[in-house]
Every structure is written in C-alpha cells, then in structure tokens.
Amino acid sequence: MEGYSASIETMTDLPNRRSFLKKAAWLAGMPAIIPASVLGRNGNVAPSNRIVIGGIGIGPRGREVLKPFLQAADVHFAAVADVQRDRREIVRKTVDRHYGNTDCKAYADMREILGRDDIDAVLIATGDRWHAPASILAARAGKDIYCEKPCSMSIVQSRELDEAVLKHGRVFQAGTQRRNVDNFRFAVELARSGKLGELQILHAGIIPPAEYLPPLPGEPEPDPEEINWDAWLGQAAMRPYNKKYVEGRWRGHEGFVASFSVLEWGAHTVDICQWAADADDTTPVEFVAEGTTLHARYANGVKLRMRVAGFQKEGDWLGLGTCPVRFEGDEGWVEAGDHGKIMVSNDALLAAGKPAEMFGTDPAKHVREFIDCVKSRDKPACHSTIARRAHVACHAAAISWRLGRKLRFDPASESFPDDAEANGMRNHPRRALHGI
Image 1 (cartoon, helix red, strand yellow):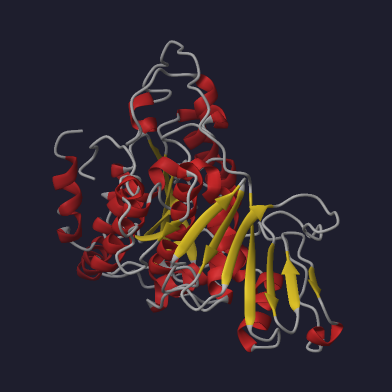
Image 2 (cartoon, rainbow, N blue to C red):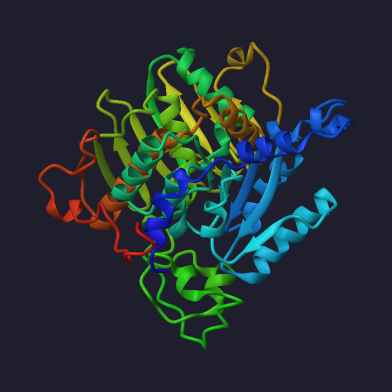
C-alpha cells in the first residue's frame, strides 16, 4: 500500500486517454466506412458521448443500483473492484452478460479503477465504513461519485467528504433515492407550498438506536486472494476475522455501522424532512432523546422527531411502508412511505391528483439524474453538502441518545457549545489508511 496517497494525488495529471486515442486514430487515417453506431445514429449513442462507470464494492444493494446504470444507453459500465473475489466476479459476469461480451474488468484493489483515465464516474456501494474514504479518493482522482448511504461515520467525516467533493469540483449524488420518488416529492411539495399551513413538526422514521453488538469470535483468515480482510476493514479497528462480517452481519458492530444505526433509515428520512423544512443548508440547534425517540428543534422553532417506524396502530405510523415521513402544519398533515402511497388530512390537498405509486427503494430516477448531472455539471438532488447536513443531524441526535442528555448544537461550526464530552464524539476512531 506504500505510495498510495501520492499515486492518487497525481492521477488528475495523467493525459486524457480519449483525446490521445482520437488523435492517434486521425493520424493513422480513419476508415472509409464508419458504423452508424459509432456516430450515434439509428438510436445508438456514440461511444464518445457515453459516461464510463466503474463500481466499487458492489453487493446486493449495489447490484440493484447497478441495474439502471446498465439500462442507460448513454452509460458504459467498464470495471468493478471488490476485496471479495466472489462479489466482484458476480458483478463482472452480470455486466458481461448484459453487454454480450467479456470486456468488464474485475479488480481486487479500487486503485486500479481510480487510476484509469477512461473512467468518468464511480458507483460506491461498500459497507458504511468505506463510503466516505472511497468517495474522497475518487474525488481526488477526478471521478464523479454516486455513493450509497450512510455516506459518513461521524460529524467530522461528513465535513471531510463534502470539502473533498467541492475542492475537486466533482458531481456527487448520495444514494438517498427518495428525493426522486414521486410520493415523497409530492409530500415535500405540499409542505413547502404552504398548503399545510405553518409547519409545526416533522416526523422521520428510524430503526431504534442500539448499543453496539459484541465482537464475533475469531476464525482463521481466508486467503487474501479470496478476501483481503485488512482491506475489507478499511479504517475500522483491526479485529479477528469472522465470515459472518463479510456475509453482511457487520451491521450493529462498532466501526462498521454509523452512529448506533440511526443513519440506517435516518439518512433517508431526516434528509427528506430537512428538504420539506427548507433546511438543506442547516441542522437543528437542539437534540434530546426520550427512550428511542430522538427529538430535535430548528432555530425557527420547527420540531423534528426521529421515531421508530412501527406497524399500523393507533397513534403510530399509518402503515405506508418502510422509511416513512410525516409533515404536520397548523392546517393539515401529509404522510408518505416506501409503498408508494400517500395519505393526507384533507382530500382537498390532493386536488392536483395523487402521484404515481413507485416503491421508495427504486433508484432508477435518482441514477438517471446523476447521469444527466455528470454531463451538465449541475448539482443533483442530494449533492454532498445536502447529504452532509442531514447526516450531521443524525450523528448529533445519536450522540444525544448515547449521552442521555439534551445537547445544544451550532450548525455553523457543527459542534456542541460548552460540551467537551459531546464534542469528543464528533469524530470516530479510525486507522490511518490509504492517505485518508
């Protein structure tokens, strides 16, 4: 791994491979007949107009996000990197089968993808611990980034990620796809339009925060060619290998999951609440936990309640699916969830018609927006700064829950005034690794 940081820093100075190949082809003499597909005719997209994508850490959820990338005519998925051989081989075979060739490259080390100047953007779908480090390295390497959530492990890392994306001028889309799902968008529009009256309280569905699980018992480490355990851990503290970790049982374990699991759903639902409250550029200023319900308040008095999303029952959520949100104003309320449905306090709020039902886990529109923004250089719906603010709110709420007391929070400095213990939890323990 020596020299890794230096190699990343110099990647943006590499010659542009496409320009070089175009010049070389011209000097050699172009063929007399050029296939229509090369010119982008007959419904085809010319190769020069395609976005070339690489994948990093593509597991089960990542493969769902991969589908709309493969279905896009103006995208070519060229390579995958994963420290687990079986996972990278699944993706390689899937991509080759889709394109009908054997061109997809599979790497054990993501530096192989970041070092390729023909790759424009990366899809990052690792476990939580690698999302921010991989995104920062990709930004340094000049790649645009679609990154699954949670995008960070702490308040400080949220800032580091945003600053890296902005410094290197990259397009970044957090995988909080509900920003591009119709019923959630409709609910937000009702809240922002004033049709609910003055907003009073926002409800964000979360899974209950919980103390970290005890470490799993150690087992013999596998062949590094099959699973590179040290690389899999990333910045997480070294611990004995157990196959359950790499099979998906890492959730709930310290160093692997973000802020006591608050961000598992909160990265989605708090993000939507911030949008509804026109608070994408700030966070609440106060946090306090009551059991597993996390209460917050914005400077303008609007309240945010992060509460466990249960089954339909009196006084609880309305049974509209996972990751529900509810916005209450002094003249009405609206609730939406992952089943694609929406409920309102007054049918008059649906005068414009109900939105089409679309499952909240579907990333298709979110991916499409990212592709379009890579071309236009516009900012997508959940760019790095928006993701930063929602993640910071979740991390701060988790700290209040862990400490068991009310905390004041300063959105400008992203710190807790006069609370040294809380400020000591703004960052998370991590190994120095790969120049991060």
